[in-house]
Image (cartoon, rainbow, N blue to C red):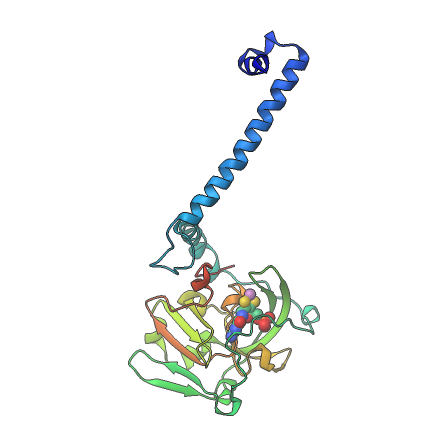
Length: 262
Ligand SMILES: Nc1nc2c(c(=O)[nH]1)N[C@H]1C(S)=C(S)[C@@H](COP(=O)(O)O)O[C@H]1N2
Ligand SMILES: [Mo]
């Protein structure tokens, strides 16, 4: 044993082939376990760190700083400035996946639904689905991507958010930095940066596969925002508001990236 320890620290040229093999094997394993221990150490350290209280309060500060760094790189380079790829009708899924159902409670009364838009002068506007259908209709077939890892090519129709705000002269509102949207029961809510909201592919959507939105897809109106992950495509919009502060965001509060850009 003493000899073996001595061999570890002696020059390779003084060792027999067998001793050299034993030495190298030992050193490899030593660093292998050291790397594992370091990994576990860093992992434990992260979990002991304080939460990002002034942000979401949901994840440890070191993890939040990594998300913030990513955000600096990708926020400006990706989402608002590019078009998501579109596909032919033949590629669109017939059986469209239903994922989240938060905010799609059973107590919903379609006949009393109105889209509520809170203006920044304090005025509130209300729209029926027919009001929205009178505006120019835009369709998009794109690859819908969920942060959980699945994706699906799907076909949607509605009015561009940018057309909607133009038509109803919401310029004072779109000069602000963010749009907030919530379900009628306020159970699900998203915040969207304005460049992504007025992106030409962002729709207030009322059709799927040329049919009215099914209930579980957010009837009567959902957001379709192809430059973001699915978490931002809120189903069943009740209220829209505008702000320079980041509106509350359901998945941000649970530790996800605020922008969720693609
Ligand atoms: N109201 C509401 N909207 C929602 C969700 C939800 O749980 N509730 N889930 C989001 C997530 S995580 C995804 S991936 C998409 C899924 O849309 P789909 O059900 O049409 O596939 O909706 C988003 N919009
Ligand atoms: Mo998702």
